[in-house]
Length: 312
Length: 258
Ligand SMILES: Nc1ncnc2c1ncn2[C@@H]1O[C@H](COP(=O)(O)OP(=O)(O)OP(=O)(O)O)[C@@H](O)[C@H]1O
Ligand SMILES: [Mg+2]
Image 1 (cartoon, each protein chain N blue to C red):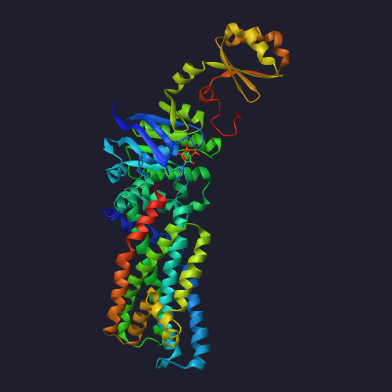
Image 2: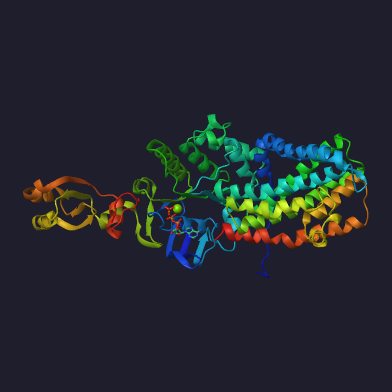
């Protein structure tokens, strides 16, 4: 598959302070590619350079073979952008938002109207078309923003945290629509700090933290490589860790302490639980659970992805 | 910066149309509010003060005051739009961000905003002109040239306001813009009284005031005294527009795109 976005040693600095520190990655046509990272990782800065909003400080960045520094208008003509912050026209109706946006891509009135109707149907917003944006729920606003990003039938859709702040049901609705866009051949590039979102949607992803790429690959492979299938979570009295390591060492690949919780990476989960039975009365909490990307991130950085997850 | 060349395209008009469309949803409220004030001034000062002053530069005071208020109201419409209005779109509603994700450039966006600012000047000034005409205070068909003058002055005030917005981008700072710059212009540009009675330095300082030149033009056009003396005022405004126009584009670009 052709690479449609290609970043090499990409750097972004604000007033001399680097927030994206020389990252390289490429996005293939038709895939869903993710940028996973905590707050302040540099996700938005990276995608803003891709959609030609922020100038590149150094390195090279091409979108569909075009240099972002030289051909921003040509690139933007073929991109759909859903920015992190809501920027709908609140005073206009749902339909009005789509039509105004379409005018920036020089669609004729008729083309714009047809396209807008099609998109509203696709996102289940038809019955709201004459409603003002102000009156919509957060989930509907997000779907409208995605619909708006599609008025120019883009080849690549860039989504900066598409479901942050939405309730679970609204998130699933967005995910479902994004998956069907991918089936139609649209390349998706999304940023997120939700690991479940990354697993649900992304074919490949990079994990970034403090402006650097920590890892890249397919979500399942990353989990397998760093953590394994399952993970044993334990909370207990102080000093319990020594006993755990003593009793369970035969079935342990590694461990990590996050706040008051001990995370054990077992070679065999059930066998490890058996081996720990003699000391298990000292545990206040014990759970064997499937490993997630969050655990990968924890292992790589010692910190959680979402701010309130752990205090390292 | 000498090689800096603005990257403009016809999308400027889309930016303008976008603002116009939003305005059409709210114009009833904002238009009536903005007319209320100048008419209040006209009523209170024109009739109240006019009862004592009677003649100003050889005409009844109401005649003298009306064209000045027309020019200053147009100035206020534009300066509000290009400070509070533009800032809200830029910083709160993120409208600039949305437009910049389309093929539009930041230059297109700022230019569209300035044209919209100038449009406000023409719209508010012209509607007041019509009201004033209905009151029988317009003496000459030369008044038909007032809207183009308002367009030029609108561009100038729009650019000056956007310079402030670009330099001190926060809501509180706009108070200072109005009390330190716009209100003094309003008071010392010959809207209410001729400057001949003022100290010499005030008269000289008035020459720097854009509103002074706009008031000269609108008053003489409305009263039917066109003449070569107005060419100086027009040239002053045109030169000022050309000199000032690149600055807001540069400053807002610096602000939005880091
Ligand atoms: N315009 C700016 N000026 C100065 N610093 C900035 C600017 N925009 C972002 N930063 C800084 O750059 C760093 C990366 O920000 P960025 O928005 O790219 O992170 P992010 O991964 O998108 O985070 P979030 O999940 O909070 O959206 C942060 O430390 C932020 O404070
Ligand atoms: Mg972000």
